[in-house]
Length: 207
Image (cartoon, rainbow, N blue to C red; front, top):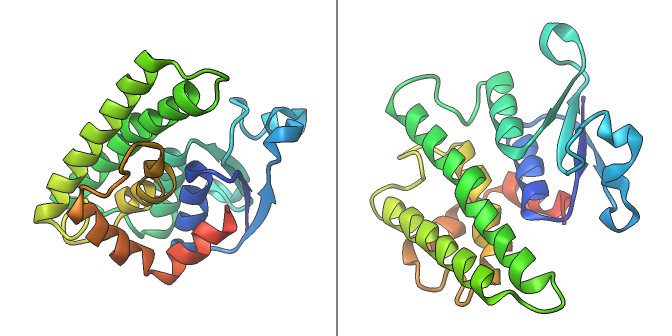
């Protein structure tokens, strides 16, 4: 059994999607950020960064519980635990790792920057908004170009790269003008990925 400590964000959706896709049993613990649940001492023992999501696998390596935080680490951990959604070797594994890292390190933080510079503060910070919107659109274009030649981000197989990217394209992209309106290949991919039953359940679990 896995305990999922989640939030109503794209990051939270990534964690619940990968658990649904892997078919693992899990209990949902919704973190109320407005009440500081992410800073509670009990949660900081699970994720010392004080952010959701995080998981506790009660049956971790060597049969001992383990805590995992950061969505890329969570998705990789679940993929390796179950042998699903991360090819064991070859080009597809490399592509999955590249695009999964792009989402975690570049695309996701760009949308976060838009939020913190343009939505969260009392007055938007124009330089920050322009910077992060520009970066987000650049990374979306790279995704769109990749998907013009491939069904999924790693190629012909569905991987953790798609699991990580889907909430960015659906939950976060509307933060930038036009969202994914100019990216036909991403729109096609969103329709394909969004039709998966596990994706629907995972999105709802962290909504």
